[in-house]
Image (cartoon, rainbow, N blue to C red; front, side):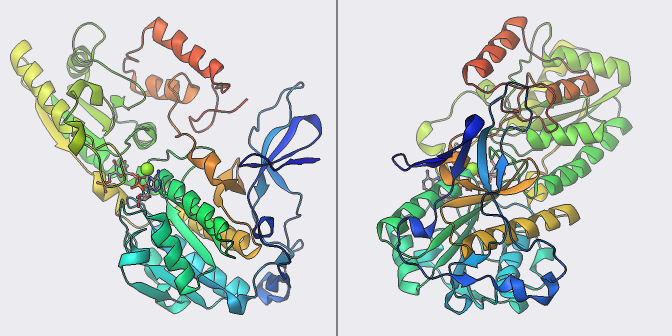
Amino acid sequence: MGLSGASKSKIVTGDGGYILEDVPHLSDYISDLPTYPNPLKTNPAYSVVKQYFVHEDDTVVLKIIAHKSSLRGLHFRRAGPRKKVYFNPDDVHACIVTCGGLCPGLNTVIREIVCGLDSMYGVKKVLGIEGGYKGFYSRNTIPLSPKVVNDIHKRGGTVLGTSRGGHDTTKIVDSIQDRGINQVYIIGGDGTQKGASFIYEEVKKRGLKVVVAGIPKTIDNDISIIDKSFGFDTAVEEAQRAINAAHVEAESGENGIGVVKVMGRYSGFIAMYATLASRDVDCCLIPESPFYLEGPGGLFEFIDRRLKENGHMVLVIAEGAGQELLGSRHSSESKDASGNKLLRDIGLWLSQKIKDYFSKHTKMAINLKYIDPTYMIRAVPSNASDNVYCTLLAQSAVHGAMAGYTGFTVGVVNGRHSYIPFDRITEKQNKVVITDRMWARLLSSTNQPSFLSAKDIADGRKEETSSGLSSTGDSANGNLVKK
Ligand SMILES: Nc1ncnc2c1ncn2[C@@H]1O[C@H](COP(=O)(O)OP(=O)(O)O)[C@@H](O)[C@H]1O
Ligand SMILES: O=P(O)(O)OC[C@H]1O[C@](O)(COP(=O)(O)O)[C@@H](O)[C@@H]1O
Ligand SMILES: [Mg+2]
């Protein structure tokens, strides 16, 4: 096996086209670090475990579908406890920060980092950074202990507070250094993980023995590589409530139309999954699938037909869908503090357009109810399965940090917890692939128009092939399956 140290990423190659995209380790830039036996070995709770530690060569494959002639392809380091740790638990001073928008499960991840550090490794010093990245240099900190975080998983939001913007690498690393922090746990989405990568680079430049570990968060499920982000299931479940309400309203009125807007800036996963789960939805509109309103094959024609057939209909729209139809707003004011494009309210706009169309062009009196549950969906506590998921993610992050790995995001890849380099996580966003079988399943469940011409479909296929990623068409979650 050869190690290519020239590039930014740590690539290890092996036989049969095997590639390990490894994560950095403290020992890459600090020599002669002392190691300690992992205290899990003597932890009575873990005495039942047959194999205490993850083998140091264990890796997780990215491409799970293989052919006879397939290369073994890209792998990531498997997460989990290691035989040796690079920190004496008494010397650990950890901190946790949450950044970006809310997401169900944030408090669970905070809780389980604190409890995992304490119960598995005996680490007692953990600090909560208030209010996101800017909290490192402008806000207070909260000492966190298992007692302090005991009940927080039952609450929505984040007990630490969060924010957008304010990422100042120098000030953040100064604060880490001044406080003597040596493990930094950063919970946040794609923007946050980019920020975490800068923190890691600066820490390395200063030669500090500080681990930087990311835990990916977003209800939009738009983080690539990982199977699914925590809180997504909860968000979909919550979106169902709004869809149910819209259906009840629509069904009860004459020519009732229920319009529900859900989050999803660039990716329509919440809308797609909520639609597939509900079966009451007649049309689902997502950012990845452009649509048009008027003329043959347009949305108005479809709504008209559905109302005549069923007497009511439910439409679910992701906030990022159809933005091009609204026209652009002055670019100076259209970004948030983190640089994310601010979107106009497509749900409200579309509802008005539908009302206008029916009053001007038909004799049909419609009864439209617009429901916007966006913030309700992400402000709830995580459900049972997300709670367990958050616990495992937090523990994987703790194991990685104690083992001296750094510059990584922890994530589940094909069902296995893995350590993924920051750059890999942030290089592109996860999107619904509308030429994939999952979107076809949705189209077949709603019977809505695809709004695609034969040329659009052919172009989409060409694009996937040329980007080196192609869909097998049968992925379980509607993501690309990398070949
Ligand atoms: N390219 C970037 N470089 C450094 N920091 C970033 C970058 N993008 C976002 N951030 C920081 O990450 C935090 C969260 O980003 P944001 O985009 O709001 O949410 P999310 O992490 O959920 O995508 C903010 O404090 C922001 O300043
Ligand atoms: O109003 P806010 O707080 O900026 O959040 C809105 C955004 O939050 C999200 O739910 C998630 O965004 P992040 O993952 O960047 O936090 C987007 O879908 C939505 O546009
Ligand atoms: Mg983001």
